[in-house]
Image 1 (tube, helix red, strand yellow):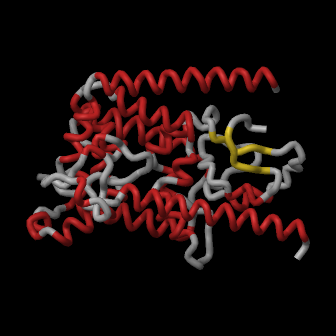
Image 2 (cartoon, chains in turn orange, blue):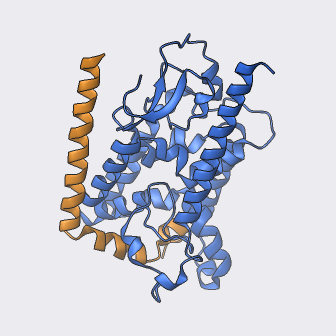
Image 3 (cartoon, chains in turn yellow, orange):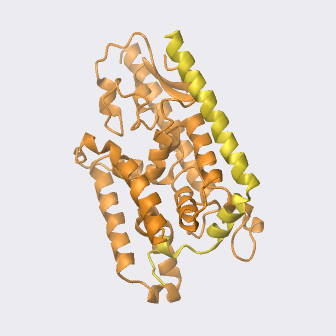
Length: 51
Length: 278
């Protein structure tokens, strides 16, 4: 039980570090600005309209 | 009423109450444009649109203040840029909460829960074997097809987009009404299909399609939030009957289909918590 918990804890910590690293690198690349630009334009596909 | 039954009912009611409150709060939070109009510029957007919301909520909705995670993911796939920011964001939420987001903070999940409460005879329509279908949708409709076609195909078919953006915007805007074509009616048909299905079988979209749930499912066994099973469990299976995603409990607690809603926690051997599974 202890070994299983340790393996899960290690996987959790590795996942957490990876997730934060990906997020931080994405922010450094300016990707939030791209998300903002995309979200600011009306998504015609979401409405169901083809231009 | 025996003391044991009384305690069980109280716990069940408490779980229902908290989840309902959480789902309502997140629905209002994601769509709170009317509450904070002073935050927005002339285009109706603010800095929050740079942040994807944790649940499935359409960013084309006139009231939405956050970005749609799946729509944004498709955008990066289409422009050919690796989505570090989005994957990091979703992985962080996944590693902390797993699919508890589906159970507690997704507006489309909330709608399906409400529909399932309608007093009509319930049926088990969707088979258990469809649990891997959301991964196929994620890989095919969200990643591979948009990459090759340069079109956001999941958004084009998404029933939440129809409900939150398609119907209100087409009703409000005469210019958009003139552009309505086959795709719009296909989207309406998909929405009607899932709404009807959700009245008879619980959470059909989450169980058979949702690519956002599939992303969180990858972290479900590792996440900080876990459904915990007590040592005194006799595996009576009573909790299976309460599971909205029709899992075989307690065997499938925290599996890819478990939305960590806590409905099974009506049994005193199960509880939703943080940390170890036992």
